[in-house]
Image (tube, chains in turn orange, red):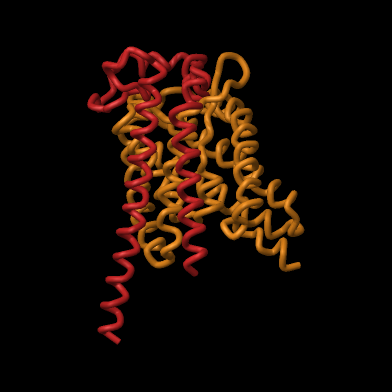
Length: 216
Length: 114
């Protein structure tokens, strides 16, 4: 989903960059207020894990591959502020060090995967997990839905940016992007559930909404 | 408290090793097919934009997760993955540490005002 240079025009990238810088600034202030000692290495290791997992592409239909995005997992575990900063950091290092995502499209990439995907997943997970009975299966279902939505919403934002830039008409590019990423989103949901399941078994204190499972 | 802290460090270390293993050992076995966006770009005919224009930033140390000058593609990707994972871990932890320090500084000033 990393946009290379040239796909999205200057004004769109500029607006996205301004929003991303502003949002990350706000996220830093919020995180500064909320962060506790225990979270410090968790933030580092989650970022490292997202970077590593994004290197692993899994095949989907018709000569196409997808990879784990991690916005949903990160926002569930670390909350939206730390998650946005983690995603922005990973995207920045990928663009600068690994030519993954164009440097001119960095603002758009952070906006799509570090803000839209993160917020959509965060609200979807917490809203669903609170609504549903506090059972392991429902927590997993909430995470799966959040993960799928995070990928499809991010991909839809890419389509919107491509359309506004005049690269491809919205009526063509939106169904194409949403379609292919709704398949990749299933992979995202499966991986998110697998990791979250491992955490629920070993460190359930790290999983928000899981505490209710044992209180009631 | 100390027991819990020890457990946290052990957990972080284990998670880091898993991340490093994915980046170095597992990722070379991943699919090299185009990703979703590349595939859509190909289908709708705008992938050529990326192919015709060189990347604006051309000083990446490992473009496409391949370190230059290494014959084995596998080793090249593994080294890029290892360096990247370590670098992301330390910058991520560093940012969190700085935010934590800023909060403490902020609190001290607030206390003085009070």
